[in-house]
Structure formats: C-alpha cells, structure tokens
Length: 371
Image (cartoon, rainbow, N blue to C red; front, side):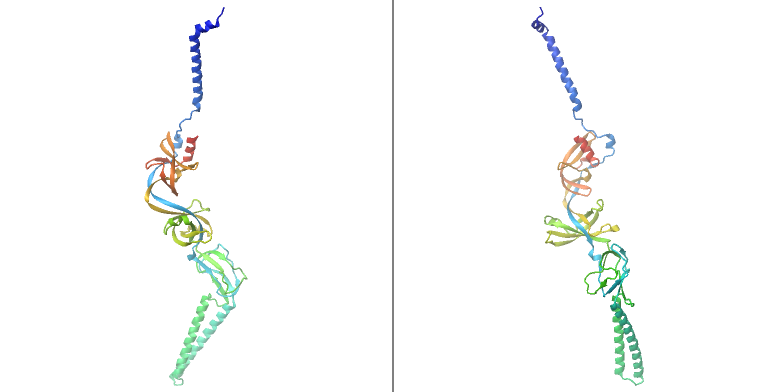
C-alpha cells in the first residue's frame, strides 16, 4: 500500500533541491525583469558634444548693477521752441509732426499789419536819411560861403546822424522780425531737426502775447533718459556710472551711456529720485516718451568668480550650472548668483576658478540628466 509519509521521507533531499532551484530561478527572473528599469548613466552623444561650448570659470573684478525704470526724453539743450513774434493770420503751413526740418526752411508765413508797419517805417527812415544827407551837404556849402553859421552846420550834421541811427534801428527791428518788406512774417527753422510739436494750422489767428509755441524742433541725434531711483538704491548711484539702456522696441540692442545728472530731491508724488543719462542716438532709434530699462553698473575693489550668463539654468527657484568633467561625467551644480551684467554672471559659491561649465545647449543636457 502506498505511503505518502514514507515517500516524502525517502525523497526529502530531492524535494528540497527542486524547491531551491525553483526559488533561485524565480529570483533570477525578477532580477532580469528589474534590470531594464534601472536608470542608465547619461553620456553626451558625440554629435551633441561637437556642438556644445565649454567655458572655464574665471576670476573677474566684481561689478554691481541696479536695474531701474526710465523714459526717453528730448535733449532739452537741443530743442528750439518757436513763439509768435507778431500778430496776424497764419498761411502756407504744410509741415506735419515728425517731418525732418532743415535749418532756414520756411515753415509758414503770417500776414500781419505789424509787418506792414515795419516796412513803412523802413521807407520813412530811408527817406528821412536822404533828406538829412542833402540838408547837411547844403548847409556845409552855405557855411563855407558865409551864408550859414557854425551852429546851423552842427545842427544839420546832428540831424543826419539821427536819421542814420533811426534807419539802423528800423533795419534791426525788421531783421528780428524776418526781414520781409511785403507785409508777411516768414517762420524759419533756426536749426535742423524733427518737428516734435505743432500748435498752428492755416488760417489760425495768432497773437503776439500768446504764451504757446507755434512749433518745436528737436535734434534727436542725442537724447536724455530719465531713470527712477528708489530710496533704497540712492546710495548705489554715482555721477559717471556706466549705464546700459534697453527698450521694448529693440530688446537685443544695448545703448551705452553714463549718469551725467543726479537730481538731489525726491519727487513728492512717487518718492523717487531722478537721474539723467545722455545717449547718442544713431539712426534716431530712440523716440521721446519710450519706456526704457536702465541698468547702472559700477565696479568694486574686489574679485569674484564669473561665468558666461548662458551657462546659467534657473529651475525650482534655484540657479544651476552643468559642471563638465567628461562626456560621461556631467554634474548639475547649484550656484549662488551675486549679479548678472550682459553676458557675464558673478557668483559667490558653487564652482571654483578653473572649473569647466557647459555654456550652450545647457537646458537640453539638464533635462536629459533629470529624465
């Protein structure tokens, strides 16, 4: 009769061996299944390695920067406002805002009774001088002939000088008012530049006591930028500091200048101090009333490690760089940023002088390392 107990007892070593083989096989199977899920070490492909740029961390003179808001304005030293010299009726005005005006160009005319009066004064002064000249010549002849006294001769000479002086006065007044003798005042541009303001049109009645300018001309070859400095930054602004100005219209173009005026009072409304930056304006790119970002920089008497700004990666409220040892040894390293100015960033910690960092395709490699 078959006995299970005797069978198990007799075959126990074989049963244990088979069980151990099954357990070991299962473990190997699990190990084999896990291997594909293990994270593989990232290696930069050769095709990518040939395109990336690797920079060396250096020691640089530390430069601090402050970024301020600002606005482009006219250079008031190169702005001319034309006010009415006489009363009358405006005619012949064809210029419009934004036109480029040449020095001496006629912007319009004013038909005026005052100009007609100046022309009449000129004719009278010329006539009186001619009469006084003839009277002087006649009196001198009579004095030489004994028919006129010395007093008569001196009186005739004084009359001639007075007539000559009056003619000079009338000519000066007429020149101040344009010099026209046909009863019209010509409005001429005193400088070359752009017409930036216009307060008159054809058939406008003009009064000489009007306090508003008729035209405003500005030479935009040079402009001012007024920047707002809050109280907390006043101690960091000095005369002569270098300034980089950017605008929304030209985000990739940097206009360089210097702080040339500090207004040592605060605006009572917005509690800011104004500083002025004078800028050359090639191509008239900067337009008055443009908003601008003004970065003021000043060097300090100490050294700091610096890298290319393109090597910086910002993620999870922290700055990182990719420390490069070899194509299969790239490390994500957190760094502490002091300031960034243009293409250079100054660091207080994270890397050391002589380290190599990746400064192109950095985000691509950073994502691959984190995947």
